[in-house]
Amino acid sequence: MTTMRRDVGRFAGGAGVVAATCAALCCAGAPIIVSVLAATGLSFLRSDAILLPVIAVALLVALWGFWRSSKVHESMMPLAVGCVGAVALVAGVVFLHGMIAKVFIGVGAVVLLIATVWNARLPRACDVPLRPNP
Image 1 (cartoon, rainbow, N blue to C red):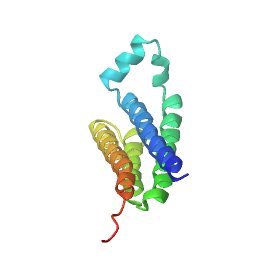
Image 2: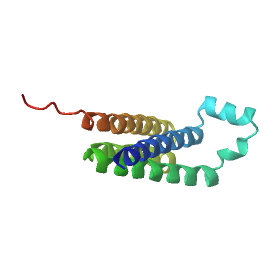
Image 3: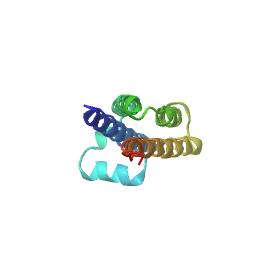
Image 4: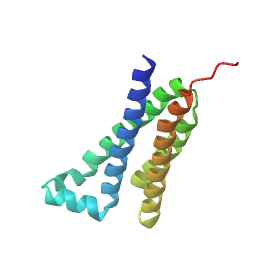
């Protein structure tokens, strides 16, 4: 059961971060994402009416995954770092404009990535078997 819980939390955290980051970069107009959407005929997805709910749901999934994993490795730090990254990402997408918005989106994405890697590596530290005392 613990292995299943750990895997669900790590997957949800990572998948949520990737989805939120891609949607936020699309909002920021990142050339690679905009060109891929145009090449595949999916340019209509650049609408804020579509991207903002996608970002919200993806961040909720990521934070839920961090919270779920925190019950396995008993550390709330990846969740706290993820919350900081989520706030920076949302601020850059929703509240800020211009170059500072792009900076906040980039910083938020990097902080979320750090939280994801931290969250994924913590359970491994918990799985180290103890050697019996001789």
